[in-house]
Length: 163
Image 1 (cartoon, rainbow, N blue to C red):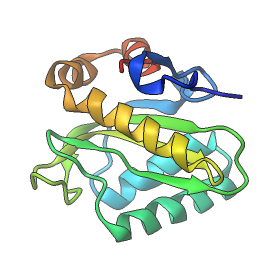
Image 2 (cartoon, rainbow, N blue to C red):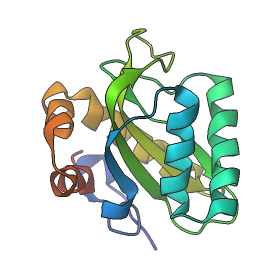
Image 3 (tube, rainbow, N blue to C red):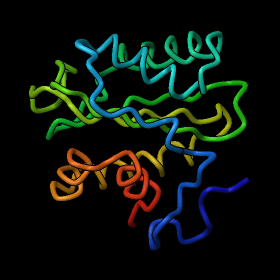
Image 4 (cartoon, one colour):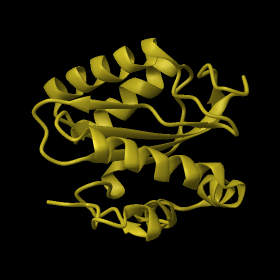
């Protein structure tokens, strides 16, 4: 299953379908108070509530964070990792009640988190989706819209990532 239409990936809007992100993978008004808690919540959402898989995903996300923070600027973090044993790319969105320290590039608290889990054998897809998400969250207007959106509104914004 291809989420991305080749060969002109960077020249079009991509549709991230419900296998990638759905309402069950969106958590608004989350009260997590630390980076570790955010990653645990992200792992739970990415695992689709499979507790064994959630533990493995959490370990992968934590391992990736040890390499360097995935906290960007503007209150945004994009924790991500590749994972053996999953067939489809998965995303989860968390909006925090209050920002947490995520060792972001601008040293500001993070309140918008998009977690990404990609099959281990899909490094190009991983990087392409990360680039698209960084552009989406780097747009202050869209980030502000996500800060105010309902779950359905957030889903719509996240499923239509512009090139």
